[in-house]
Image (tube, rainbow, N blue to C red):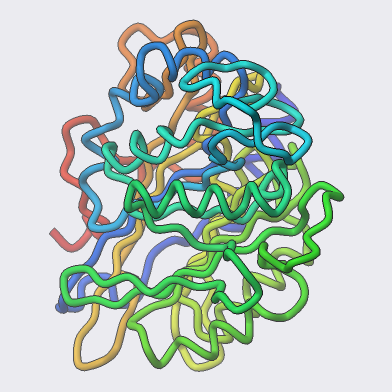
Length: 370
């Protein structure tokens, strides 16, 4: 643990400056919230089907509902009635973990009620592009889209057929936000119909350039990086910068199952962009502490006279408790355990202490201006 903390400290020195030049400039504002992987291993599904999936994040509901737009990565299909072999079951087992239709690692599939739970919790958009997107093959991708459409939960990163688009434009408070999601892999499960956007084939850049004139800002949410690595590779750093140069405003990554730092980058035309290389697991059954630690990011945008800029960023450090399962804000826990203390230290070493959101504090992304 000591060596890990030292390495995180060194990472923090490289990615430390999160002040934005136009933080205090006046304009219309929008706040985006984001969490990482909704990764429902067997015991989380069992609890969710029995007591409701919102029990996995009950204490965080006010913070999920507060942003103007809230994002999460839905890691795995929500394909009603589809077995591990990609064929439809004779009978859907319903809201139970049966290990065949609704199953966990390595081939995930969730009952579609997860979509309703996320929507009721304040989530406005999910990514469906990740390495488990094809766990129920092409039919699973389509069934997941059907489920999300049924519960009116917008998604991005997959499509029902090759004629569909890999982006989503959302309107909120007079803003138009373009969302693009992609994945580095589908775990060697073929995607013959091209239903999942690849992060590395150049199409993300093409889409950014295609839609940037139609929106106020573009948010890219890649599923990328090396599992359990607490720092991004040069390839990921460079790719994030490329997307910002192409016109994106922020890149919010997932997949490594641990957090990786955030980074401010100034483009050649003077725009300040944000990359969060990995948000970590939002909910999962993974251990030890480093895999149970994540963050909820709050990104503040401002605009005036057709110009958009980042006004600031804040975060909540999160810890995934087990049995019963519930993710909590580690800095809010009274009488914290050794593990909660370790988790909080990991997050503040990586993301600093000046951007942590305090308990009962209003979500203001540029507190230095107030």
